[in-house]
Image 1: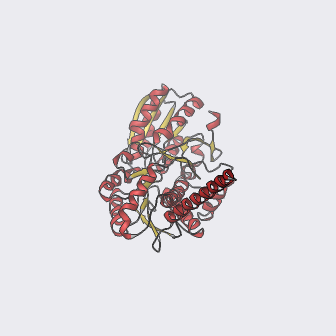
Image 2 (image 1 turned 60 degrees about the horizontal axis):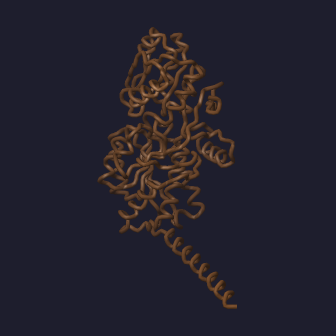
Image 3 (image 1 turned 180 degrees about the horizontal axis):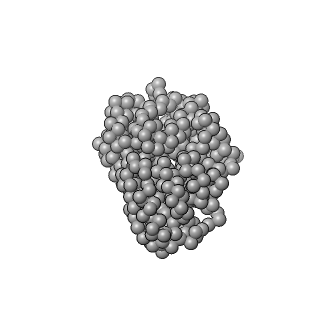
Length: 393
């Protein structure tokens, strides 16, 4: 009987401990205030607006779903959107507004690397966790411990694409054409491609450049054609990439193209049409995955997007909001005005420790410098759509 009593008391103790733990977790998850304010920076106008529009839809979809389910710790999300126009100066103004005037707990954005590059150093003083959802220029997360990127840097995105492109077309010598002003495109053209091509034994016979607002690429293609390359590598956003490829076909230059992180948007095919057939790009979120979870997400985004295809900014921005929800509820964020600084610190630490979050963009894990780590899909334009050729290379 004594033994039975000990067992019974032990069982009761375990139940009490479990209940106490549950109560602590529940208390930690309860937030104060009328709303949980999260800032969102995105380019709704200007270059690459397609990326910003998709990011806005993804962010709002996540917030709507979370709010319908009770919010974060019982408090509904309020997203505060600002259009940074893809401009560095506007990004500086907005990050200060969100941190100091709007007093948001965290910021999702910016999208583009050029804006991220000027915004992240400001975080050392502003001390607000800021998470870009599509910036891809290598090295930017090192600019501040408060800056994170839920995306893959372009060196990681392009490595398997270069390997697949070389194998598919027997590439031995290339011409690189890249934007001199756009941060990620310049980095890809001047630094990322050279390293990857050297590793693959591909010779760079010329590097040609242009400026973001250029619309005439006839001179670059004339030069490239005279060099007789096996292929052309682009450090370019999709609008310029489409124009460059169309000009190449116009001049009779029928060589395969490979594009960087900003090239692989639906807009490339929409603008470039048949000229883009055979082009290789990458994506940090594959939306043709047949799983129910992914396809439900795709349907929901398209329902808000005129049934159009969208770049990976939508799933990455969507995941950002859900990850923030989990971090706030798990780390004792209070959402009290007096606790703003400590709440932001908790969110920063939470982001640094994100591991294998099962989002619609795949598993999200932050590496040691605050960049997202995960799988890459190799895409090829086939019959007017992006086909996943990862498994065939």
